[in-house]
Amino acid sequence: MGDALEAVIAPPSLLRAVGSDLSAVVSVTLSEGLVLVPVTEALASGDDPAAEAPSGFVRLTVPLVERVTAWSARGPVAYVEADSFGGTGSQRALVWDRGVVDLGPLHLPVGEPTPGEGTPIARALRRPGVVVGPDERDEFDAAGLGAHRSTEAWAQVATPHDA
Image (cartoon, rainbow, N blue to C red):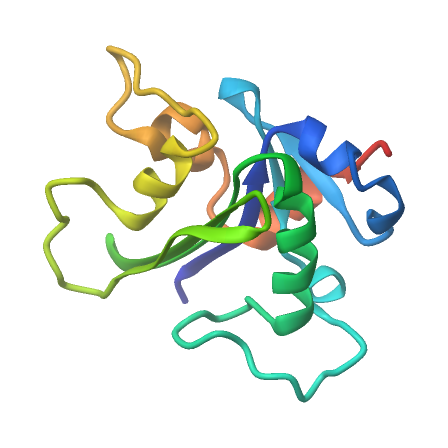
């Protein structure tokens, strides 16, 4: 079985700005002054379970899109997905800024070469300000996303987000 990551990544101030919308939110502080919100079933669900997810994404539901759009009112918020098995995998990403999609949807299927501008997650992480240091391979590494391999592992180390 492979690993799967589904997460929202943003500066913590953007999440605090919508404090009443944080009942299902847990987060982990990343490097680069960002927080990672693991997209659990509770966070992805909403009032309309029949609502279709945007094409190509695993856990990006319509209710989650509405929530992330609101969070992005004051700045960039990235939604990322990564699936891997045996060293290969796929990535998907979207970034909202000021309430509209600013980047994406981006998709790198299994077996496709990485484009010159980087993977979908690397490109998405640049929007909220992730910068690659001299000892880091890419934005994924710079943000510390390799610390855990799955949404569930991130959720286990997460704490309730302070409103």
